[in-house]
Image 1 (tube, helix red, strand yellow):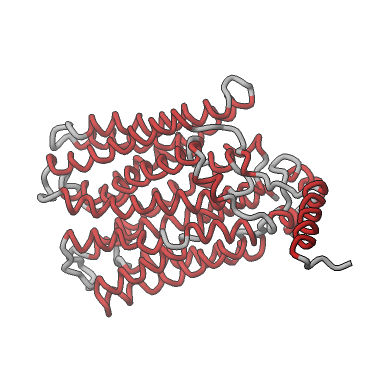
Image 2 (cartoon, rainbow, N blue to C red):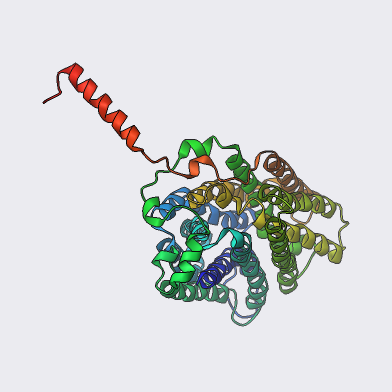
Length: 462
């Protein structure tokens, strides 16, 4: 049953990322003339970047509350609401664009981001309960690699559909229907923990619970979040900064790559979709190689958990930084070489699944969803900055020199955030992960102290 849950969570990231990426590709088709009579919008680059960033305005709002709610009540209903509402909003986007122009589209994207803000903290909480330690890296990679598959599918499909007789509205209809179909499957098979699943065997439930963490669902509901322990933990800060660096670098490429292909490399929309998807094919495939290698190193005691996380996070951050630097100096017109460097940049970034992204669970299985809510919330402030920074830096959309400045910003964030991660990340469960139970001795001391104070104040009654 844990494999069924992981498959469904993998599909959730696949479908949810497809809905995020749909706008990055489809906005090109929405602003170009077509042969089938679909509406064309006269949106400037500034408006397009505002639309692309609007998703994250809503996305950051519910990250921390979602993490806390997942920790207390489980992630089943939160993830269901997230995906169902995302589906409905996608179905509404074409109508909103036609009737309310870009402002209405921004409204839909903000709401979509708001509800998708429930998703990742819920995923982390569910993995913390369903993934045995020996399978955690593999399962985490499978689940989160769905984001790359969704990106690949959407970049290809969105480009083709936008140029077809079905037009750009069909991109949103397909994405919305996929979200709703997934929600039906999750309603039937989903569960927050093994103990609340109606489909699991007793043998598997015992195996999972003995290999995931010490706290059961009922006990966890009475655990308060150790805020002081979290915010004074350098290993947590290393994850937080890594998440911020990843968000800026990754989303700069994801949201702006189609425009870069179109304006600088002069690639048509169909080819742009295919070429833009290639780097994410590389990332998707390499993520499984990185995952297998990381588990091999850890399970064979070749490296410690912390060392493995640092090695693969370095591959995920400093590798793309170096290849982006090379990409920024490739002469204009060398499309195959530019695409190859983009494939290296994005492909190596797939190592972050067994780097910082799974480290929340390493530090605190009990509060992994809360930690993910915090880091994902702060990280997505930088996701908002990604398309907006392009508007601020790029004056001439066809200038390779202007785009080079965008790449330099990503390089700096990749380098510095990973340096902090290397210095301060830990693979050990933190002391604040476990609640401190009140012992009988402590209760007795408090009772004696209370009686003494009552006697001194004359309130003690015999």
